Length: 117
Image 1: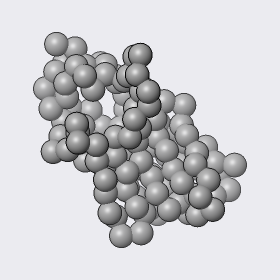
Image 2: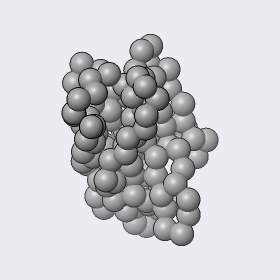
Image 3: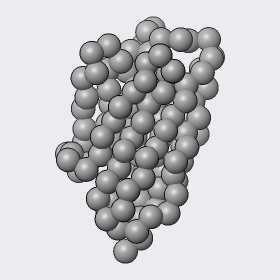
Image 4: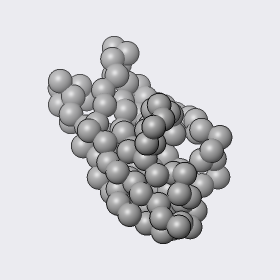
């Protein structure tokens, strides 16, 4: 079993920054892909950013390109999301996601990010 624990969410004014962290632990010690998704009120969960653990290739939603940066520390099984120039429309619950080497997805419990005007 794999456990994911997110931290770093909170309330921030528009234009501000936050850094989300996700720690993965458990039996699985290797993940093919790590990333962040979000669910805004009344909307479906959407991809924010992903990173391939081998090589570091990244993928971002168009809405966050140039503002958010995903990174990982494979040795520590950590993934981070640096969010800058935050907008009210970035308000959502942010979920950490990892894909194991067997292709199994795991999800964190989510962390709330609220951006005020």
